[in-house]
Image (cartoon, rainbow, N blue to C red; front, side, top):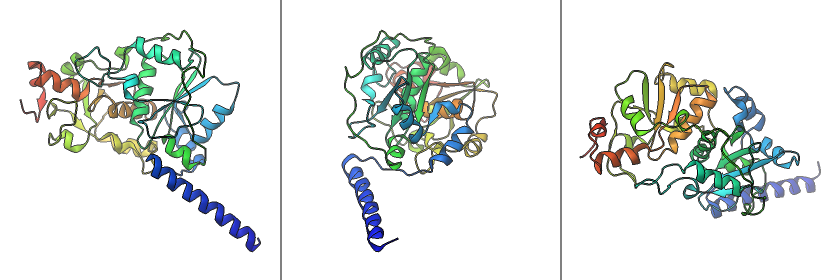
Amino acid sequence: MSKKMKISGFSALAVAIIGIFVYFSLTGIDAQEVDLSVQQEKINEYANPDVFITAEALNELMEDEAEDVVVIGTMDERGGAIPGSFEVWRPDYSGTDAYPYGGMANSKEELEALLRSFGVTEDTTLVTYAANDQHDSARLFWQFKMLGHEDVRLLDGGINVWIGAGFETGDALALGDRPETDYEAPDFNEEAFNASLDTVISAVDNNDFLVLDTRGQDEEDGSTTLSGAEGPGKIKGAMFLEYSDATAEDGTIKSVDELEEIYADVIDGDETVISYCQSGVRSAYTWLVLTHALGYEDALNYDGSWIEWSYEAYVDANQDVIDRTENGDF
């Protein structure tokens, strides 16, 4: 190799590194480089490998004109998107006015309207992705599966691995870029995915259930109360395992062996696991890991989570909830 070629190669690498640094400075999105073949091998070991997709596989899927695919990023105005994808944020799919508190998943009708506006049909492949942390894409994934939509996938590692793989970012699609459809939920089944308040109340002190607190340690021990909740505390008897324990340093989900080791001391396999957090987002990530990575069949996400539970305890003075709360300050 000539000296000129070596310099040219070095310059190209320098430009790429500088480009990633500038992108992070402007957007707050940290590029993550992963070995895509190793990542695919890891995914192949999951209970439902078709649910998870690598950046490389997503790029191929989007470039295939024969495929009907809609990609949706759960992005908090960070800037930059996967080209050809739509962008949404929590007010678009949660925080419905049907409740006196925020955070609850939007209704079936509201989600149907959102997907109609994105040109989704029953046969469309839906792919969700997020930035820096994958719990928001997991929450949207959970909501789409609750609609009964068949083909829903999650970009493992989000837009961070997309950038790290060298794929471009750009502007998101706008409404009208795909023709609106008459989409209706194929098989909406809330009870199979969501634990209601009454279900969680009955689950406390019931050996057939295991309530799993996936929040941060300071929330679990009552030393911190996040905005939206009415006071500190935890659901009585809940086991604690933070949602992020399932995430590798590069932002992707850990391997089956690692996940089994993490959850082995908490779940024995016979209970119905109900995961909760502040507003059902981080707990949706845990639900995704349990059901689709590990193949755990009996798992529910508590949509209301601590926002609803604390409202019932501190505002409505629901004695059933108060009696089943630890570390509270009533």
